[in-house]
Amino acid sequence: MRDIVIHSQSGLLLDFAEEDFGGDEQAVVIASWRERHHTEQGEFLCHDHRNHERPWLYLQQRGGLLVAAHWPGTGLAGSHEITHGISDEHKREVEYIQRAETAAGFESRTEVALPTKVRPDLLVYGPHQIGVEVQRSQLTATAAKARTTKARQAGVESLWFSDNRRDPPWLWQVPGVRMMDLPWDELPPSGFVKVVSGVRSIVPERCRSIRNSTCPEHRYGCNRWHPDHGPYPVLVDDLAAAVPQGFVVPILWRPFGGRGRIILVRALDKARYEAMTGRPADIPLRQRERPEPQQAERILCAADAGGIVAQKVDAPAISPTRCAKDNTFLLQLVPGKLYCPTCHRREMNARGLSNYPIPV
Figure: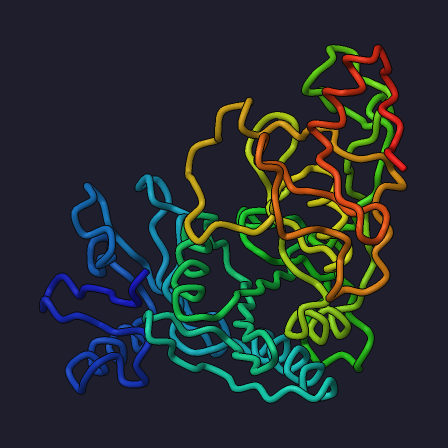
């Protein structure tokens, strides 16, 4: 969204991204508001929602931050906020992450404008360029996804951080995490802040042991193995150092039914997930707003729990080729020997075997 607020009385456009709000006349409007510190309903309008029935905004000073937010009861309340300046707490969070990037040997800069008209809080220059977004306000998932898409179009992968006490609306919709609850009234020491939500570990589980799961082939589950995910404790410092190197990556986790979720996992876990499901876990540039049909989101039982043992992040045991018959990823369980899990399952069914022994 654009950082533009309309002053209804004068018709001036106030650019909250500019130091002087876009000019001398705009600065006078804000100075006048600061003298009375009161907003009349309809005095300020949201440029992005100017065609809405009630696009009214009120201004509020929060420390060093001037915030324009939608009035309650207008149908737009809580949808987004337009901010001018940066709060001290926000600065400390960005500084904490930047300090971790510097300790890991990465150069980083704040407030770099990308060609696609998005400005991440911190741009990290590593093997993978990462745009760090520290979000303290109630940003919608739609707005976060739009910013993430624009950053990706500029060749930058976004990594969102929240300090809310609960998971924000955009978590699981964009690559991001929720940090432990802190006041941020001072800069914490290095290695202090923990990630409490957003990073997961891929683990193989027996189908009937997965809680609240629906087997794609059997009503009451089967005895085969499916990928599941569990908590993976990590420090913000370690995460900030691992993501630019590609050691921790976002994947699109597809459950048996419903909409996919974006989670952060180790690159090794991504390889395990792709091997067990037989399809890539990369996030499409533009995600669908509607859930995909259930058939398209089913996870196929493709490999046994011991089916993949990858030792290196950059060399997972996955063949880049696919089966010519089923278009399924070929797996490599023994060096130099590939097999198609779908064809193998079909062959085992024809022989009356239900446990699908791994070929040797």
